[in-house]
Image (cartoon, rainbow, N blue to C red; front, side, top):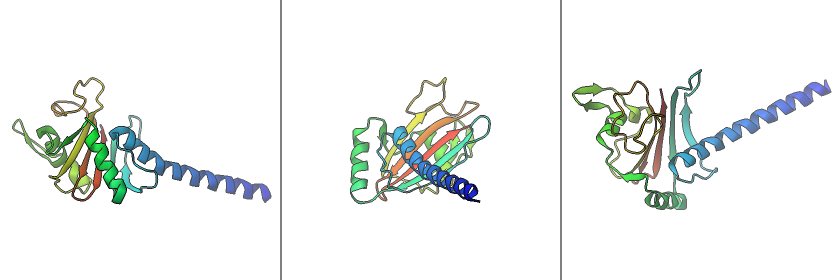
Length: 169
């Protein structure tokens, strides 16, 4: 009986430890991707559907900043060359909100998945993670591909909310 109690305690401790690390991992992952330091104390609402053999899926995250942290994030964005002032490029706009490009209607609506309103006052960050791509930061030619692997983040200056999306198909 005593060994069973010890085993159950160790198992519970491991589960609690790993679930706590997972929360820190998303903060670190977004920070590494965007260059914006996100303190471990900030709670991030997110969903990650990556999994399976190929690791396809989406990571959707909403990060709310306030006070000094929001001011720090704003300052950091201004220092980062990879962050651009809105509006999005045409291709990224179609990717986020759906629309028409080159006479083809696209039904992408990642903004809706993120429950993100149309943001006009803010900044955006984009990283093309497609291995054979040479586009790195602009997203001009996302549509003729058989798969998509990119990260986009949009920071709303009016609400101090960061919307973060990773897509792997």
